Length: 121
Image (tube, rainbow, N blue to C red; front, side, top):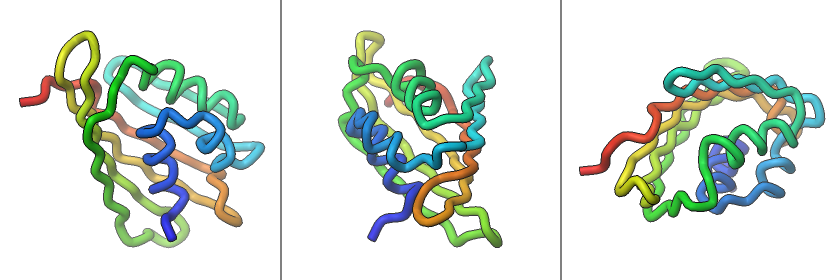
């Protein structure tokens, strides 16, 4: 069975707002850093708006995805994922490193660091 972090990456790849919201605790402590911007959210709807409304648009066609889950560090888990994306700007690659804590399979705390959209060779 996949972890909450892996399911988070899968929800991004599928542009699945409902699946992403279902992964989040009703009160989630979310922070993200993309090149030039810091993001914060406290509810599942805010997380979905940031991730699928700002970071990954419907026009970003994810053509390949990879992910890996590392061993937990105490109560904190890590998942990294990379997406090959085609959009109006051309072929791009995006990588994110995500640390999270979950309770009963729902994410209560998450930190995301993003590479930004980089040209894909």
